[in-house]
Length: 256
Image (cartoon, rainbow, N blue to C red; front, side, top):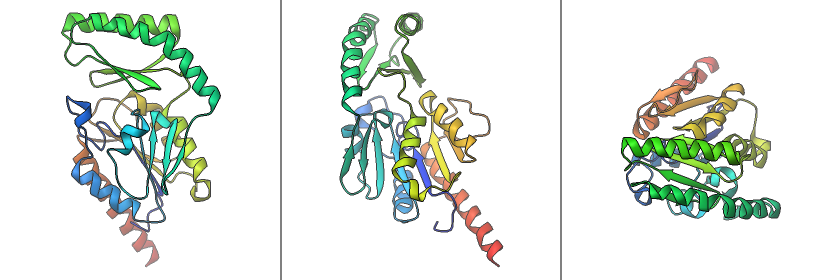
């Protein structure tokens, strides 16, 4: 894969390189995706990263691949290859504390709806409603709409989950820009491939495509015009391998 122009390879975790599972604690990197990450990260010309709304500590425990940059909390926490960690500044931490004190009690009231589960991710909270019936889902939708209206929070929807961002400006587009800034000497404009599966990825995908990068949507849960669609993490690994082979063949033909 050394000849490829795409030197930034950025992946969401849940539903992208990990299959969606009922118990989030059981999520692991899909086998073919793990092999792909290993191969990509072994190339010194590549910057490989996994960006997730999970906390960094959670993510670190699931991806033990040398050379892969990990971004937790949608890019607020970073583990850089070489055991170097970066985190948000004190002002952001103080704002987070204020927002958590305000919003967590409001979110806790959602648990009165049978089947609702609230997952505290520190910088965000996930409202899981996979076990909620149709009537309850209508209530969840109404409560979340009120939350947006009254508190101005940003909510990203995924498969049977709503991700409430405690700091509205936090998103994966900012995470990608941070990744580029951390590796600015290796960025040559447009050499980005991004793969994700839900609304939390959509804004980042649009930015990547505006830079002439390549985007893969896994699972068909969002519609991003111009993106490439695959059904599963396993299919994603296969599609990227095919892309790599095609680009390498073009490169060889040009050189001949």
